[in-house]
Length: 134
Image (cartoon, rainbow, N blue to C red; front, side):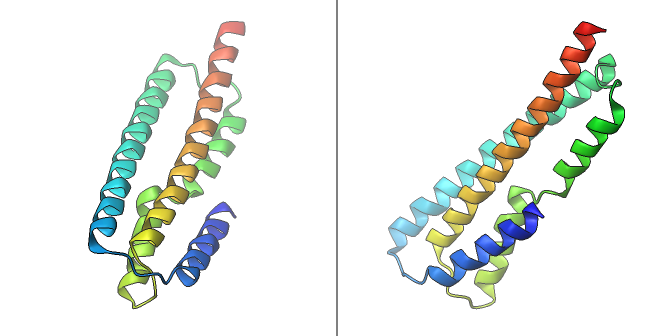
């Protein structure tokens, strides 16, 4: 559901943004987008490492169905790479997208990644609480 809402938001952005910008500004926006992607990838890798570490300690064993459900929800969210790839594909198909639209999509992707990170952090926190109270 979130992915369809996000895809719809990206489509609206693509339709609404038709302003051409100067090449220097486009380059700056692309650099900013790349930095955001790198930060998201680092954050996601850190969360994966934390999850594997907690799982190997046996912290994420209680409440398995609850955690599995949340993990499944997180897995259905589009990644920032998928969102950016979608925007770039639409751009190549001749839509009126420009670098500002891609930057806006990257910002939306960053928000989605932050929401996923917050949800994952909550899962880890719950698992740690269960571990300490067990």
